Length: 428
Image (cartoon, rainbow, N blue to C red; front, side):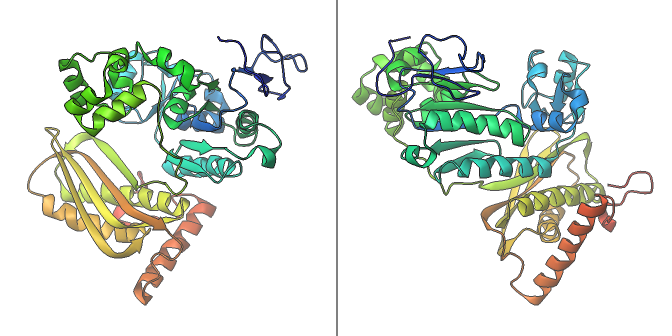
C-alpha cells in the first residue's frame, strides 16, 4: 500500500477506536488485531453498509444452538434458497439456488422457513441506527444502505470512519447481528469495498487505487451489466474492465450510447450519483413455490390468503401502504403471468389485498397447473392514514388490527380466518 497521507488518522482500532501508527499490527491499548487502515481514511465519507447473511444471522441470533451449524433460509424441495449462512456457503450453497441442489451439497444443513415480518423488524432497527449517524441514508433493500457522512465530523466528534466502526460495534452488541462496512468516495466503490472483508468487515477504497483493482475483473462486475449487455461487450472485444479502461470514451458512446459513457466512467471508478435519502422500498411482496403443481382454485385461494397476510404484516411493520396490487403466477413450464390492478386508496390490509388478488386469480383458472404464486403491493407511501377513507374501510381496518393485536399476545394461531383453516391437525 502507498505511504500514508498526512492530515488525520490513517489507522485505528475498530474495537476501542484508538489511533495507531500506520504500520501497527495490533492495538497498543486493547490488543485487538481488528484495525482499520488506509492512507485516505480521514477524508472518505461515503459508505455502504451490508448486514452479513442477514436472514440466517437473525435466526442464529434467536437460536444459539444453531450458531455453529450450516443454516439455509428457504423451504420445500422445489423452492429456492433465500439466504445461506457463511458456513453453508463453504459447501457451495448460494442464494437463489434450488433447494434440492443446496441439500445435495449439504445434507446436514438446517432449513428454516423465512420469517419476513421478523426480518423487517430487525432491518428497521438497523435502519434507525443508521439514521442516527446522518440524515442521508439511502436504503437499497431490507439489509443494506448507502450513507453520506460528509459534514458530520463536528457532530460526532470523530471522522466518519470511526463513526462507522462504532456503529458496527453497537449493532453487534445491541441488535445481535453483524454488518460489513465499505468506505469510499462514491457509491460504486463503497459497494465494492463492503464485499472485500466479509463478514464483520471494514474496508476502505479510494479512486486512486480503484482502476488497478478493477482492471482484471470481468465486465459483468459493473452493476447494471447483465448477460445480454455482457454478450454485446464481448462481441466487440470488451472482456475485462481493463478493456473498457483502454477504450476511448467517444468511441464507447458511439457503440453503446449513454451506456457507453457510464461504462467508461465506472471502469475508472468514477460515479457521481448522490445518496438519495428519500429512496425506500418500491414493492413489498411474498411468494411461494409449491411442492407439486397446483391447478385447483380452492387450494390456490388458501395459499393466496396466507401470502396476502404476510405482505400485510410487512406493510404494517414498515408503516407503509400501497395502491397497486400484483398477482404473480408461474406455470409448470416456467412461463410467468403477472397481473396488476390499482385501487382507489392505499391499503395495508390483508383482506383488501386478498380480495383484489383473488379476483385476478379467478380469471387465470383455466386448467393450467401452477408451480409458483406470489402477491405484492407497490406505489408505496406512509401507511398511517391508510384504510381510513370511509366507514366500511375503517371498520375492516379496526377488525383486522384487533386480530393482529390478539396474535401478538397469544401467537399466530390464536385467530384463524376460515379460508386459512385446513383442519384440526394443520392450523396455519
